[in-house]
Image 1 (cartoon, each protein chain N blue to C red):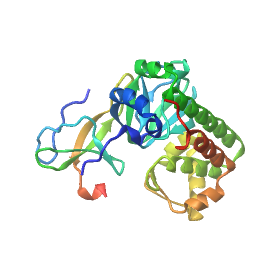
Image 2 (tube, each protein chain N blue to C red; image 1 turned 180 degrees about the vertical axis):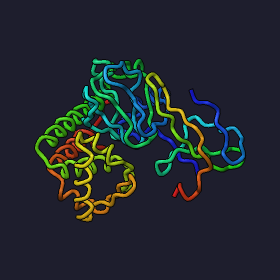
Image 3 (cartoon, chains in turn brown, red; image 1 turned 90 degrees about the horizontal axis):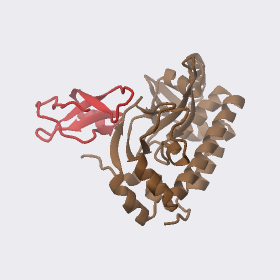
Image 4 (cartoon, one colour; image 1 turned 120 degrees about the vertical axis):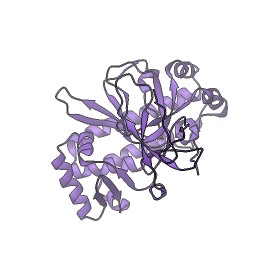
Length: 241
Length: 65
């Protein structure tokens, strides 16, 4: 059976009032986003905003010496390319696909027109931006104050919240790049979680076997981020037309 | 730009707008024989607008479960 595609697999698009959705729907283009695909590079003007239907897109900062660190992740709860409606047109980070997926994209002209109307799209885009800022802030706190295995727990839980199932395809090197640490550190942290029976890690596939256990072990950063996403983007909020 | 791709089983041209994804694997179904061809993404260069793929073989049914 061929899988079906629907823009409303993205929660922001799904939350748009009908009038607004029917306006943007013809402007959405379905695209494939394979692992490692770069949606935009640091400093380059963006052409599209992306609404993932599944999967994960990672926002990374690359240092001059080639190290990288993840600033935030986006899945089907949000969009990639806030600089287009915030007015900056480009950003200092890079957006790269961390887990293959499909997404819907909208070109910058249509996006700006819709945002300028000041209706449901603008309302949701701004709330999403606030949630994303929270995630970025909390990531920096976590990286400074919490242990590597707590950071790994946070990263696993935030990733799982955006995926179907309990498996992630990720090499330790990629995780190290995301967390901005040495690969050996990830090996040790993943080993601790595996020993505790929380995950199973084999050949680039991480299976979370005890999610409640991960939630017990993670620092407060996960709950802070999740709480803000739930508060700002809950299905119960009333979106203006 | 996406180069023409052919079914790994019957060599009929594969017609798709975007490939499908199951269990982290990309594939395209063949309208002629119904088999699925496994696809691999070609890493992007600066300026690429959409992802492009190459065919790598017949996708075993078991890999979709």
